[in-house]
Length: 191
Image: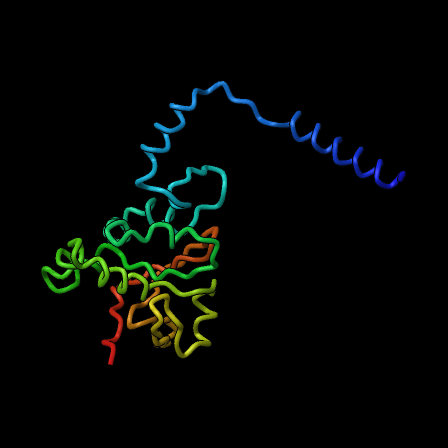
């Protein structure tokens, strides 16, 4: 009987604490629904503001003046949330110059809404699970990409190439690493 009373007392104590700790708000409920309506079109981790953590891969790309086309492509393919997940991820980030080197009209065609799937496939070919430095990548023959294909890794005169693109810089991120590359990597044609 004492055990039963003890559990009742414990339960009531927890209940009182929970009620006492309940957060009160004076904000009218209709204001909260207005906020939800205005933010519902862009939701997910990519749209949370955080000025104190180590920048994630998407934040690094957005802050880079050399990756404006990449950011535009990621937004067109609606892949923002993929680049902020916990990872770790390696992103091989083509510079604006790399995108401009594509055959004329290619980028404009890929950015059209009806080609979103093709654009997403190409962008996912630039993402690999893991967090490996340029030097560590020298040990690989290939890396598996987020689009379920593999990209070859080659070392030429101590330079590392992934999918034919040379790594020209590396930037650590809160959820992995950004390897800046000098070429847009195109996935091999599926057989």
